[in-house]
Image (cartoon, rainbow, N blue to C red):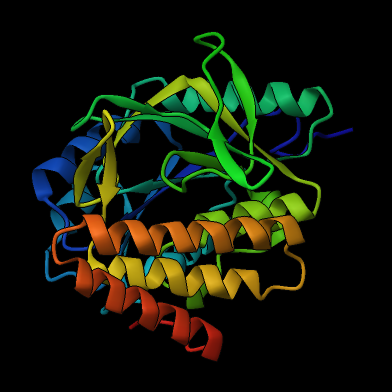
Length: 304
């Protein structure tokens, strides 16, 4: 019996999909230098930048897909996933332009995914453990505990832990899981795209896993707000619009468990209160978040 490409023990063919939007060329070059040797094929999907990426395409033997305008991260990822299918890839590795994978990150992810599947797990995706270089904190993996989201502790450097969802960058997904669960939701545009997909996969019986042995640098937020010894990532008011709008959209999905509805409502309330009070130009953040809630209730999706 011939094994399928994503079956345990089979040869993997990984397609790396890098989404760009007005990228910093030296940083993007460094990312491509690190990831190109780790994947079997490489796709760059550009979301309407005015930056010429043809030289990078040639240097790294990548397929370049320029969308002409900013259709959002979800559409760009879906374009990359389709190309990966056309290339007969067994796995898709999603990456943001500001991520820097360790030289063995893909090997670590593949080994973890194969081990989990060999153990009978229905794997949605496996994801790398990331560090934000600006604050040096490890972005550990999230799980729901009642109405709170908590982070899995690193019990061992090579531990593999279940998580409710993964950030898209540094996540490795078998192509047959996308065939079963579906792709990203285009109309979300940005924010909650990976959360929605992870929870949807979970509702269908597929679990996501964090791999502490797979390392990556990744920056979250435009800046940070210090509070009680921690640094809370700060996004722009527009990003906060998308976050609350898309949270409302997610809450309205019939497949979402009620406990997640309660958790998201509570998180939205805390987010609104915190950034309205603590963020610079907090009033603008508050206005945009209220606009996001209103548009989510109206079903007004896509680009703002």
